[in-house]
Image (tube, rainbow, N blue to C red; front, side):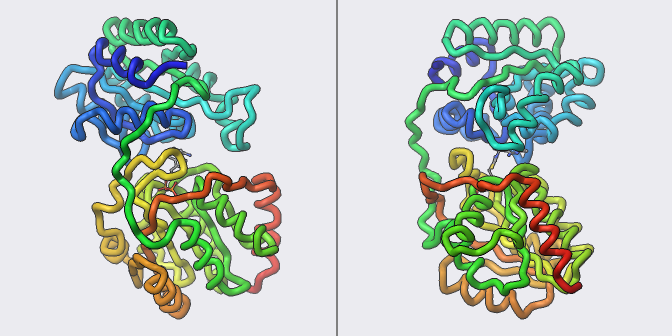
Length: 378
Ligand SMILES: Cc1ncc(C[n+]2csc(CCOP(=O)(O)OP(=O)(O)O)c2C)c(N)n1
């Protein structure tokens, strides 16, 4: 295993002192080392992975130094446009180092959405002509790979990818101080919401632990899963899945359980919800101020006024609840209000260690969900 500190020191020696990206569970130890040790202005957690590539480019234009961009391989899709049309050596030719967590590496057990991404990842790099190397698990491997990356920057002035396998980095004991003391956890808020829904309400939940908590709630309460769409991948897009259903099924209420990191990742979608104005959509943000599902790294969401943004985007009603009493009354108001309704719930970062995973495949989830929608009057 490689210690995050030693890896960081090697990066520094090669001239990399600026970091940007979206956190990944597999890079968790490295990301939290960076979070704890890099001055705030030199480490930016970006809205999405493409934004990190653009930010690293701006940093290079201003300093002539390459930056490091970290991401899970799920985020490659978000970054392809700026990689090909900005940083590529045939366009602006920007040196930067990408550190990419290899979820779904062939031969390792992982979730379906990661298995697909993991299988095609190296072929994607080949297709977009991206130089890459797979990091071994010793510090000598790290030295070799970083040396290869540096010579690529210096000779070709273009991005270089270091692929990181599961279990490469050793543990970093974080002095994370970003916790909040809001009364409810995400799971408790989800329970209260699901308990308040009517039999015909449909749920679309976001990527990460929120969907797993929805699944577990149904299981614990011996309820069927047919009216829940669990968005296992596609981070940041659950609100548009919900919108697609809401527009096509105007007589059913659609409840989107979104996360703050996910909302911020593709925040432009809020303008489209406001503009299309579905009366039957409730957009709930479980705001823990963090990417909790992948290690708890902070988002910008505690520092911005989400309900005000929703109102400005054209939502008919925007609310915030910070405890169980406020959540009860907000859910009551929302159930009688014309949508689109926006509800931010401030929650703490606690989550269960023993949280399970859906035992239905994505296709099984889709089929039962579609059958439920078909059988509902519209
Ligand atoms: C495009 C993309 N980038 C990164 C990830 C890894 N990832 C999975 S869940 C998650 C955090 C989601 O944060 P948030 O929406 O705030 O929900 P929370 O986990 O805090 O409940 C991240 C970064 C991903 N799945 N897809």
